[in-house]
Length: 200
Image: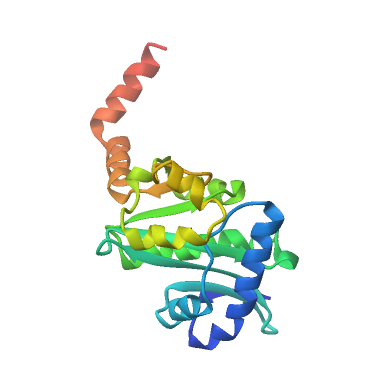
């Protein structure tokens, strides 16, 4: 059995394995990635800002974390990684959905963003309500972009003055989603719908 749960201080023992798999996976894909230190991931676990998946035997399966920026106005969902032997089992989706739900529950007003070059993550983001955006629409906190310096594509980011890069930025804006839902439920929207179908 695989358990997907909030990571705790007891999961720090998995940090080295998580970092090694994250780096080797990036090399295999030929993509860049912001490197994380063991200390930073351990702190995410202490702060309960991470989700981990493990088997009933205690084997590490997958991981992801979140971080807040600009006084909790933005939340980054980052670092999603699954052990190769557990891929294509639905674990990545379960971790992604769990970290997203935690982010929304703790910071319901915050905009949630994700930067990725992986098509699978883009698809999961889309299903959760994320939309592709320019880098100008996510956090401007310099500490966030500092983390990109360890990526092999950082020169591309610098050359484009942090306007875009090889990664795609995706954003979940709770206010926009709320407005869209209200529009769909409003009497005016029903009138427009029935008016259009009547004449179609």
